[in-house]
Amino acid sequence: MSRPSPDFLQPSAPTPKPRRDFWLWFVLPWLLLALVLQIAVADRARLAADPEWRPRIEMLCDFLRCSLPPWHEPTAFHVTSREIRPHPSVPEVLLVSASFRNDAKFAQAWPQLQLSLSNLDGDSLGLRRFSPRDYLGSAPATTLIAPGQSASITLEILDPGKRAVAFSFEFR
Image (cartoon, rainbow, N blue to C red; front, side, top):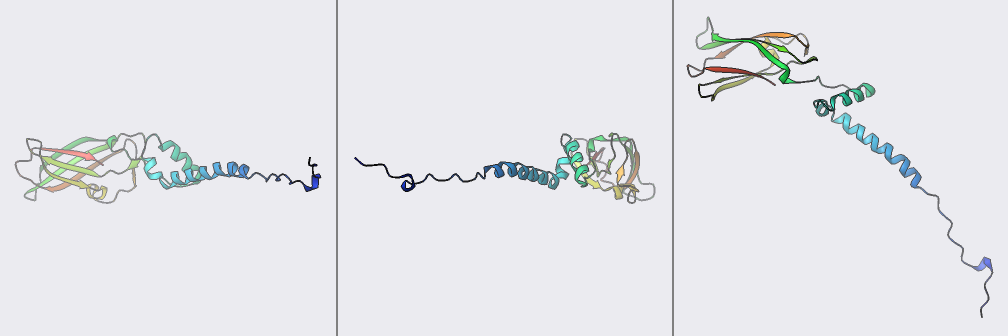
């Protein structure tokens, strides 16, 4: 029969190491939050174009003092009058006059204007996009068109001939 050895000769149990998990669980959520904020700020222009995300991104940018592009809703622009006629002094040129209004509840950037001419079958005969400088005759006085504000435009375009029977405006 063997005798038990004295306590000082028996192997000692390993001493528990201090747990580092606490720091991981404390720091990880903060790092994750910082990453989400960084992605939101970096992608703010695209997120600000989404009506659902715009208020959240505005609050974030108010807090972080970052800038957002102006709200842009092309469907809020409506043509209030339009006319196309032969130019009075230049042959084979048409004079296009129109007025449009920003019916949005907010100021927005001046739109790009697309004018298309079509034949009797609805086939496009010509299409051109005009910048605000092109359709206003000079750069706008402000970068934004206010809610309810109207603008008058005059354009000179080449006459596509008698086949052109319809024209339409679209805002981009």
